Length: 281
Length: 281
Image (cartoon, rainbow over all chains, first blue to last red; front, side, top):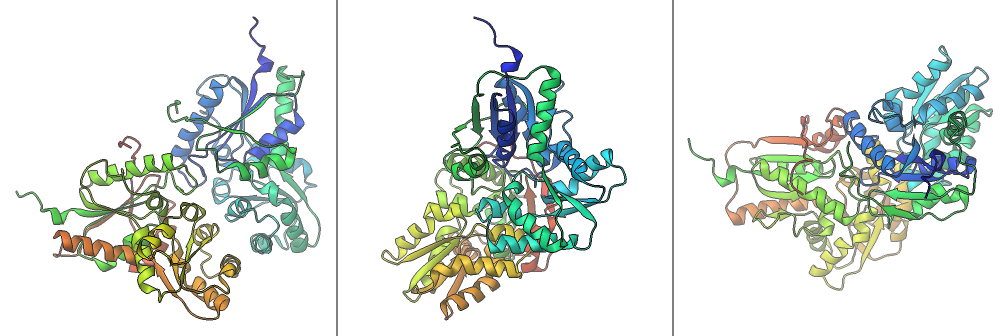
């Protein structure tokens, strides 16, 4: 019996909840041969309101669990963790860790024609200035507008993605962009791709012209593809195996999960429970 | 030096977050001489989406902490925990535990003229049927309408208590009550007293007549007063001491906390951090 080669190891993806499934789905679409392990820390979601010390403790447990599942890299599909920085998460070992902030910032700078860039995110992501800093590493003097959108996540979880109330909330949140020179908008939260339609319509109405709307999910998938190719770690044989874990009971999260995962891939999601309290943090 | 008498022990109050401060504030107003200790488990909020086993584990840690602060009774100002039942929380010891469901149900039955009763709550509270069961213990054949209102909590936390969007959400949530025989509505979540104005206006518009609106907070305060009086545990001397603890960093929760506490008592809130991970659960 031969030990499976390193390319057989999975891509590990974690998020505080199920929103990161939009990132996992983009990876599965871009890299369909790869094995994938997803962990949603639904017993402790949301992270955005926690202190930095608490967030890093939870994130380390997630990485420890994914490591136990034999992964070749970890994608942090959580803006809060990515925004705090990924140093220290891998606990000194050589496990590569890819966040959502830098790929999203890179995609926005690539899409922009030199105008200013708007970042829509949770209050925690906006407070962190992580997208602003990542954009300024690539385009130092670019003007960046940040818009905190605290009601977008609950509206998506309520399923009101095509609802008048959501349109009205979007209109109020995006109003400060009227009259600005923005040509690109980053959907800086894993839930927001489900609101792409209403956000694009509201931007058109607010600005009177169309702009590029980029989401981190597809940008992350491209970054992962590039990393695996450079490292010679691509799995190329058959369609990869996909496994999904949550830290709280999986029974009532199915519908929301399907919305994030199944809408993209036309697949039903099968979630298993895992207790990670005893993993090192 | 004399050991302080049992009446000197505090009233302990806990909630998953800061919403329970509306309950603590009602107790402080009704029983101003009592010492009060509040614990908000902000590192693990919200409980409503967790499994029953996880919720009971967290709740026991909260009770253990309050017990370490010398309390004479514990008020569970959390609908999710109260809805699951309070048996087992005190770990076999004689500490009295008072939840929010039964006092709220009692207040609604007392306020009603025999019409049916509507319960507004989070999806978790509605799914538990706890208010329905508590009302049926007092009024077995009473019709009860339950309305899940998942966006009310995020709207309160966004501070949109007097906003068009909130009015529109309330209109949509309360529309199923049109044409019913309700004469009483329970605000079945600690956040909802801040929406009393918009809820009352929407009920009037939806029903074309006014109904009684009861909240559990004041009902709980009356229950506590009755218990202390019966047990001879009332503290009657000077104004009581009030202490507030949260399990995550207290720095960013001040504004929301003031909304729940200060609006009622015109006081600023001072929150201390406590780590309860090592308390027994």
